Every structure is written in structure tokens, then in C-alpha cells.
Amino acid sequence: MSEETSSIDESPTASLERRKSPWSIAFRLATWILAAGCFYLVYTKIEEAAARKDLNAWQYLVEFFGDANWLFWLALMIPYSVFFFMVDSHVTWRVVRWFNAPQLKFTSMLPIRASAYILSLVNEQVGKGAMTLYLLRHHKVPGWRALSSMILLGLMEIFQLLLFSAIGVALNFHLVVEASSQWPLDIILPAVMIFAFVYLPLHIAYFRTGEGGLREKPILTAFRQARPVHYFLIVLFKAPNLIGAVIVYTFALDLFQVEVSLGQMLAFLPVIFLAAALPLPFHAGALVLWTVLFPDYPEVAAFSLVMHTFFVVFNATIGVMFLPRANRELFG
Image (tube, rainbow, N blue to C red; front, side):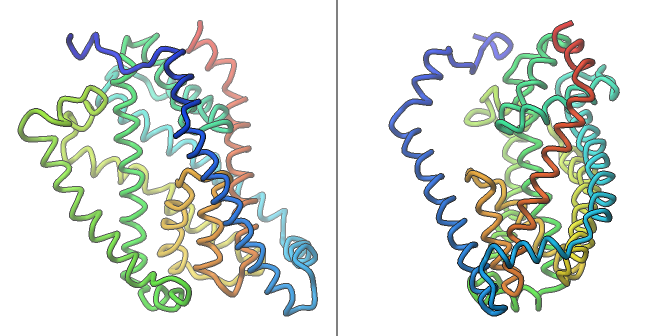
């Protein structure tokens, strides 16, 4: 069977059975237990900080959020969320044009990408379904081919975070050493980054040369098509969002009376975003990492939860604004 006619989709019955398998249930249970442990660890850190002020944890958090300048915070977050949407749509549009639909217009990408934010409130992977459906209906792109482009984007998202974190760590390694009181971050971070920078050239060379193996997997088609310049351009096009996040988080923390530098954010924020990608409910991994990297301010874990919640809800609001046009694009 040819790649064009093959399918990686499961039948609804098989998919349901897989989701209900003992391993799936055990994995879900384990993630919730780990998330509960992360929240408990964060709570104990906040409780210790509160005790130093003769307060309980809840009083401490109320005081922390009460001292924030919420008006300026909104003035910071709303423009950044719109900016993120535009940059995110642009890089997705570029990748889809390269590997799936060369004739796709940027204006057609906006409502589809925006509608995906609504679905991402339930599950980020479900959000990719809107793009797959659109490409199938309007450009006759098989689902596995569209998904391969999304996998490529996901890989480069991880590499971009490691790249910028490496720059921040190199410029401010003393800050990493200072933050290594609980975990040996001064060893872990450089080791992970060295591995990533060794792996990527090997990854590109593997898919660009030879035959057989993973190269023949339909779902990895985009990796076979991608040239080194594509990898470079994806990182370049996505960079404004991460640079913007570093700046926004630095100023936002200042509005909550937490003193951090741009250097700290450049070194640590990409790593925190990587932790947020772990399959734990409520981005629990990122919450713990905030307290590890900023031990003097354990309350920043609660701050990060507020930041993330606002971000995804506001992006979903953008999706609602584009929803009528998205419906016409998808089902019209």
C-alpha cells in the first residue's frame, strides 16, 4: 500500500480499548499522584515562607497577590497574548506551506490556529485535530502527513527552548550555580543541552541520507523533506515568542514584587516551559521547578499558575472571536 493511501488512524473501538487499557489507566493514575505530590511540595515551601512572617500559607498568598499591580499586569499580558498568536500562526503557516499545502494563505491559517486554542483547553493534542481536518478537507492532505509537520514543529519547540536556555546559562552560569542548592542544576542543564546539540545534527543527517528504518514511516515524512535551513528558520520564526516571554515574565514578576533579572529569566524560563510540557495535570512539573529555581520566592509557583491560566483562557477567547470563520473554513 502506498504512503498516500495508508492510514495510521485507529478505529473508534480500537482507540477506546487502548484508552481503557490497564497501562493507560495506570499511567493516568500515576500522573495524578505525581501532580498531587508536586502541589504538596509547593504548598510546604509556601507554608515555610509564610511561617517566617507569622502567617499561614493562604494569608501569605492573599498578601502576595494583593500587592500586585493587576492593571499593569493586564496591560502586559493582553498584548503579549495577541503577539504570541500572530507569531505562532506564522510559523505554523510556514511549516504547512513547506510540507503540506504550498498554496495556503496566511489569512486562512489564522482562524484555524485560533480555533485550536479552544480545543487545547481540553487537550493540547486534540487542538492539532483542527489543523489536520482543515488540511484534509481543503487541500486533500492525508492526516498522517499533516501530523508529521506538527511533530516536526514540536521537536523544534523543544530544541528552541534548550537553545535559548543554553545561551542564558552560558551568559549567567553563576546564577545556575546559586540555584543548585536543591538539585545539581549546574550539572543537569549543561548535560541535557550538550546531548541536544549533539543529537540534532545526527537527527538531520539520518533523515536526509539513506533509506529504511524510521525514514520510511509515513508519520515522519516531514523529517525526510526538511532541509537544515528549515530547522534554522523554524527556530528563527519561533524566537520572538520566547524572547517576548522572557521580557514579559521579568516585568510581570516585578509587578508582583519579585526581583528577577532578564538573565535569570533567559536561563531558567525555557527550562520551566520544558517542565510544563511533562504529561502532568496543571503543569505540576513547572510549579515545582519554579520553587527550585527561585527558592526565596516559593509563591512564584502560584504566580506561574495564574500566568498560564490567563494565557490559555485569553488565547481561547481569541479562538472564539475567529470561530465563525473557522467553522466556515472547516465545515463550509
